[in-house]
Length: 245
Image (cartoon, rainbow, N blue to C red; front, side):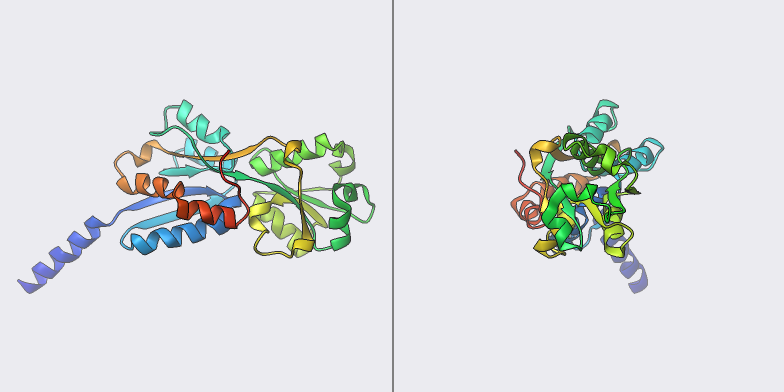
């Protein structure tokens, strides 16, 4: 009898917990790790599995049947597509504004700014694949607006996502990168990066939606609400995002 009671207690505890799968854009990784940890402090029984990738790649996975409960993008375009397709139970909600930075371990390159792309000693420029990653699309927009497309054309090294673009610079595979400020603000020296004028690329309104798979999962709504809380917003700001405009 004791064994039966114990088994029922364990079953009851497991049923009281919830679990969700979350896609989060690579640009959010440092902030999201902190946010998820804070959420878990108050919801220790619940499980949040977060998968980081390029937004476009994750959207393709979702449309091919991958069951993300929350889709946290690096832009608003893909969450809007999910909503327009009838595959979301919320409208897109903007949780933060992203920023692009020039990044290099060569401080002279950083001082020179984007013009350094024309320098012959700069052999490789790292950006995320613009077909998959909003930060890559923003990088191409920046190059166009600074009339640097031709100078950069033969130097581009494309990362599968924006985190890989940072890694290319860290490893020496690229001399310079146009990357998410959120991935370098707290991990690199100030002399190693320079923020890009935000008027030179489209505003990066990073949004999320609760997908159709979250319909019967209260935890998804709870975590979505938490993303907009003051606690989470402070974490986003700490890592280089700005508050929603």
